[in-house]
Image: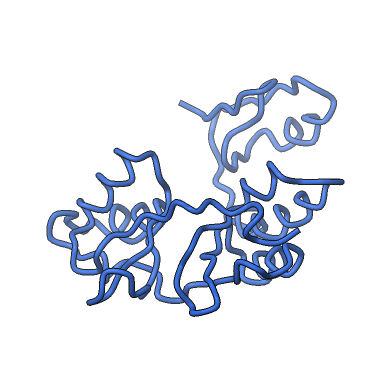
Length: 184
């Protein structure tokens, strides 16, 4: 299977000179978590900006969205794959760089789509995507854990038993059936 078989061909752009507020509103209005950042030419890829970038580089740093440019918070180190590249190679690149999205480019280096971990999970055969997901998401598993006083986790399934044993620590909420709950 090739990257072009699973990629989303609808790429969305935001200018590097635009405000972070513009990018955030575009993401909100189009239900996106990832935008390509263009340079002086409209289709010149100079970076990407994610909803996580907005949270960690704007909100967490108390920057003013209307006064902060996309260029100042975007990721310039874009990880790409080619449209004709084998999906296994793209999955390995996702694990290596711990990226949940790759920009897909054509022979001339122009972006033609985005390949996301979700795309791979939807197109998965034989649980290959699980290995990719574990590699990409390992940074979240290694994130610091914060104690939460008075929180008691009750296992809803036998698989949740280990989480219940760590009832003094919360990392990203707890699964309850098919829903993920977070402390209030």
